[in-house]
Length: 382
Image 1 (tube, rainbow, N blue to C red):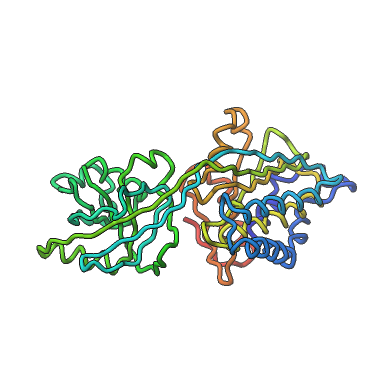
Image 2 (cartoon, rainbow, N blue to C red; image 1 turned 45 degrees about the vertical axis):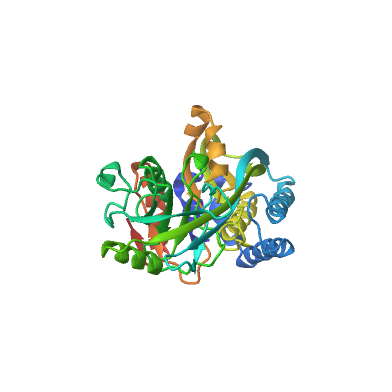
């Protein structure tokens, strides 16, 4: 957990009171973050996924058992260790879909459904002429209104290349320009497995967009080339979807020490993507934060207050963290001086990069960069 060492060891986070013999210097917490402990947490999450069809996604029993597990671990750390824990419950739209696409030769094409994509009406789906759209790999294809001038997709299925801007923006603009449906295709070679879920289109206006599906680069590029050469192609898109509000939870715990007006926050998401145990994507951050929590409760005399969060329904449009932020008052939001996100951090060959793309990131980014350099790591600052 080298990244967290930058937080613990930074002088700005340590109270001058650490010289008190009754204090345990916060920098000592780094040695208490144990790889064996992190692996044990990962094993526990894997077991909960295994019991429920290798799934820890929002709305599944595997996810609910993961929430129970994290709360149990926090409970063991809480005894006499100055922790205040809040479970924040919220409802969010759960959507599950199946997408099928038949190509111009009427054969099935490997396709992925998109979370919060609208369903097609009727048993056979939509069969329409396929319409090409402009490709712009620099700005992003079909990301802006001006890129749609002179493009005729009315009552057709628009073929659009993925990249740069969110897929939801592309589908929304296709809807606005009269498309009957959208077939998106990847901008890089990616293995697509039938029935797996890709990225979310976003819950906002989810039922006001035309149906959409995603295919691979090879098929999409082939269809685009044939359309450009003058061929007329027809494809069929069928999307079956069901949506229902389900309950999810955020878990927030805070060490009751340090200035309550100056909070350093660490967060991760607890849920996996659909049909996945989520041991790296979600699990690695969860296990790391549990180990960090134990370590920080053993140290003392912090200058800043430390708050940790496990977000729910993250894979469904960052729902948990958005819910939390929407309920913070302006005064409480100002107390959070920096937020560190731990997501998909399990790697045997990590590349150390500190990204500062906003001025507000400069202070924390500098701390991380200086610490990693001091450890002799090959770190890049962007």
